[in-house]
Amino acid sequence: MASNDKTADSKPPSPIRRAGPLEQYYNVASRIGIIQWVTVSARYEHPSLNIVSKPVLFTALGEVVRSLAALHARLPPPSEPPIWQRLPSVNLIRLVTWLDKDSNDMKAVFEDICVTPTDVPEDMPWWKLYVLRDGTVIFTYDHTIGDGQSGLAFHHALFHALNSLKDEDIPSEHSGLVTDLPQYLPLTPSLEEAAPRQLAIPFFMFIRVVLETYLPFLFSWDRKCVWSGNPIPTVITPEVNVRILRYSVEDATTLLKLSRERQATLTATLHTLALVALSRLISALPNGEGEKYQKIVTGCPISMRRYTGAPETAMCVHISHSEGPHDLLPASAGTDAKSFPWHVATRHTEFLREEVLRTGPTMGMLKFLPGRYEEYFRGRMGMKRASGLVISNLGTFNPKRSKGVEGAWTISDTLFLQGDAIVGAALKLNVTGSPEGGVGISITWRAGAVEQSFAEEFARGFKDGLQDLIRGQ
Image (cartoon, rainbow, N blue to C red; front, top):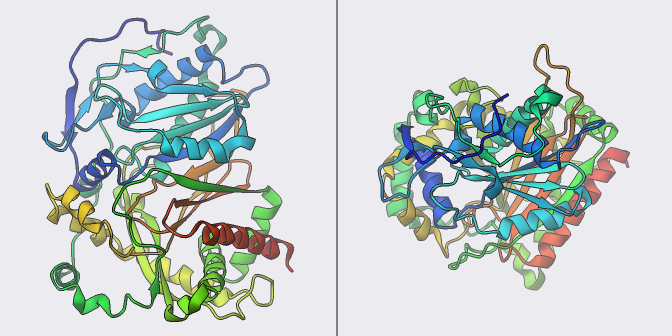
């Protein structure tokens, strides 16, 4: 363990590498308020130590900052060359906030975090930490330094650092300054550098994008019957609504068993359940509004790490995105064992497996927007949304203790909020598996993306439907 740092380093930032197009895209989106930070939380427990203790947390956190270059680096404003800069020091006092709340208050805490300004000074890294009194640690960070799985990578690193702590490593006090940062620790390569073949753009895809950009009326006919919530607002508002669902090991096991028996993944099962709930609500829209809708477009982030070689312990932005239209389900589609449309879940599983092989070019298109990212975002304001729902599943989080490390820290109760983009889907489902075997789900929507009563009914219908599936009713 490094010693307790006490004096700030006055050296200027040093260059690391050039940012890839996807990193530049998120840099602009974040700075103009189009997208909010990603958030991943977990609860830490120990028989005798407490992560709420500043010396304990700061000693371990200092090691995490030293081990992950993304935590001590940042990109300059878009007006400057897009070169990642390594900060000479990190002041944890400016990054960590203790809250007199616990995991029962997560809804309110998450909603407060979403409206907290993220325009941090240029001498600070792009992340913050909130620590609750029950040991819950909430890591929130700019999408420019990491995708959703990067949040789990942070918690993996913190879990390892805590379990590597020895009593003699913990000082009585800690200044919060981390100054002895490694000068040659590389950032994970950009997506474009790590997987150029997967991002190559087929000719037919390029032509369609050009036509959609310059002759949008050719494609407008098939958008009128697609539900996607309210149009993207012309004014950026930060307010986000959050609903949290937690499921035990037994409930998660039941859901996985049901899905596998029908050749479906958990992601596809949850996606289908969301379609059931949305189809009912859309069909019941007042004044015959629901009659004009026949489809809903849904999206799903796709990890590209299988192609880039980035391990689960790396912080990086190695993702693509899949979207596809789905017919609204008939009224006969229910949430009990007999009426649940398992064929839809099975079909969506097959669709996602195929998308894993072909979504890279979506991100490859960003190379045609150099210097025009803000223009692109501003041009979307006031327009119809591309999708009504997006579901993001980080998968199972099960950090292993390193060989020879026998610390007594445990980690549980993980939750996740994807970076909420004002130009994105109206409703978001965010899923992660907890280390103890349970599942945490958050449902989020921006104020105005849909009517509040509609969103509340969707969240309630999704929750009730999931309980029906688990109970086998």
